[in-house]
Image: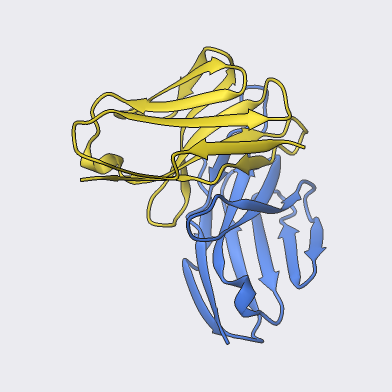
Length: 113
Length: 114
């Protein structure tokens, strides 16, 4: 069966520090991968998606970047964090079936102080 | 930009009551999904509806997709405290360049009091 795991679960970082959140998927090949951000337990905003190794598409201009160095690894990064980067970050992979359900990781809570 | 308007944003009810959450858009979606999320966890898929007019039931939960595939509703009968959580609707765009991207509603925070 497929699993998705992201870490760290919780992160407290000072303004101006770097960020690296990692996500890995097991049990599937060539998945579509996504990074979402969720503010205050509300709707999800799509940040990045990837359809293959080295292929990254950004949905919104921001202080963050994403990379996909391996087929089942997706990384969210920043060189210098801003206060506004605080939030709950979710990694997800897509079922290749027509209906396109997303399967989410456990989430990473980032607090920038 | 495709938007999904979800209402109500907050719902606080007593155990045993019925409730309905709505998800509306001016855009057509190829499918629509409903997710439930617990605090500090990722959303978990409840159901996917694909055909206009489709109705799906999951125990006390009934999901409906509008005939024009622009709207959906979630109805819970005899709500229980265990139903408490954030409910999210999400629409999948049609077309080869969509790459499975979902448009999410703003969410409905449901609290069921014992």
